[in-house]
Image (cartoon, rainbow, N blue to C red):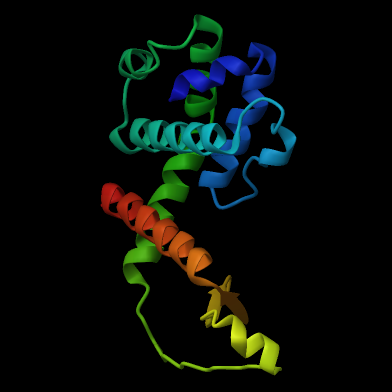
Length: 176
């Protein structure tokens, strides 16, 4: 689905590509809000997934220019060159970030896992809705700083979270 990049003018491609690389390097990635008029949500997700996968593949395998150009054969020359330039101008940064991410994920140990089921109802009307909710409490540690995040999810949101976690797991397995 990298051909979706054709919807963006060639002169704007480097900015988007560098933002994708920023996201892979643990910084702020591209925001759909900046490009919402070009792609639908599905197209945006497919484009981000294909660009991220391509960049991770090229950097992880140390692909040559010819190999990357072959992967980009569906794109016109200007956009393919923009991808090549972005990947190779930030190759060392990407490689370092991807190796660090893989090491961080593989060295992370599950320290505390506590299932708690709570049913909290504030009125008779709310209890009549019969909508199960999950209250997920996470203890995150970023850059040595620990913080707590509490999320309340309904069934659909929980399914979306599970799908995202499964996708992340696939990425981690590809990086190993």
